[in-house]
Length: 167
Image (tube, rainbow, N blue to C red; front, side, top):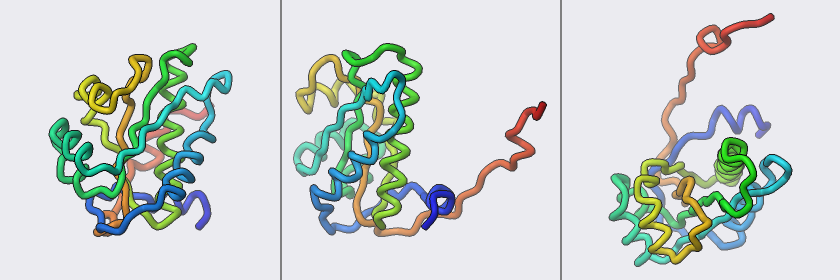
């Protein structure tokens, strides 16, 4: 699959089978994330991998998307390490690029995932739950596993609706 096809066929998957995802596969996904560009190459990301059902159950109480969290085989918590930050906007953009790299890698491996953002309302509680250092700021949680559903049909605004000028 070429990169454009990968981008246009990736969908958020919210239901997963019970098949386990190997740690080596998760490591490869995270490694892909770390190849995202970052300002001054500061690589401001840190990751937490959560497979433990007890911890996932506690996390599920902190979001409206508890069913997704509980059905996932693994969660990857993506953090901004503020101790490495030099420009918040650039660092947040780098984290977004990191997450996109991970989502595309997940898709290319035949896995499914969804980027959970609503969970950020509970970022302090999640940091406390996992015992992370205070310099870490939760940016997203990626729920992943083998898909138990197919992704929906995607649609996008036309280029005429999105390109505001050509000079």
